[in-house]
Length: 312
Image 1 (cartoon, rainbow, N blue to C red):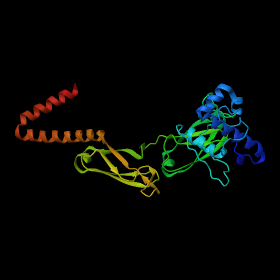
Image 2 (cartoon, rainbow, N blue to C red):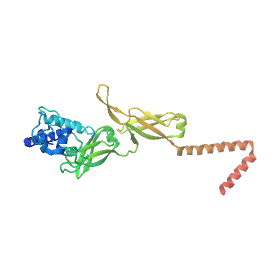
Image 3 (cartoon, rainbow, N blue to C red):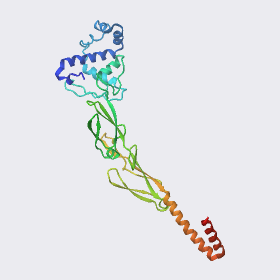
Image 4 (cartoon, rainbow, N blue to C red):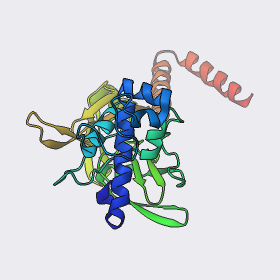
């Protein structure tokens, strides 16, 4: 914020503030200087009690470059915060481009000085806190990529979704103080498991037992994919028909890959019951014909008993 290159209209004040920030860190990062400051305050540093700088706002002793110290400060301070730090480059050490995941420089220094530590998404210098907003993105868009529009605070935002984005991906608009968190919308056919797509299909019991089954599944990009189950198989995998994802090869080049399509078979038991009923009727007819030929009296007795049972 206070880097001179970020304030071309007020460069002198920015340089002064920038040096103050760097001097503060030089004191905080040196145990001896910190002890002098805690014991005697800024006056002790001005008297050279700790061999430190000539006070906040003065120059640097030992010719320390504030830009170099600034880079060191954030490489150390951000080491355990999970946020990336980019020190932008630079001609004669121009402005640093720092990604602090929403942590303001003044808040960070307040934490180093023993004050309240910075909080992610908190307000900085009186600015409104970053609002978190969950956005449910269709699985088709996460598969192919594309624009997804969302409204917030009576404004319309367009998220440029990249193929393979997962739930939890965050898109932040710093000026508007809003961060959109991607969530996967429920899909009628597929569910997602990592980089794989999972689908459940139906087949008759006879196909499962004897000949297997083949299904045509419409993929998220509207292509048709053939899925074949062997007899007595309840699951199968189609390679390369899952969600896209990026990985790097041995040379470091970024490549796009795809997971698998995992299909599970659900047996249609209603059809099995219908077929069992039909086969049962056929079996009774054959048994009746056999009894009529071999034992006619027993056949008529069974027929009469069946008729009486149905009337009751």
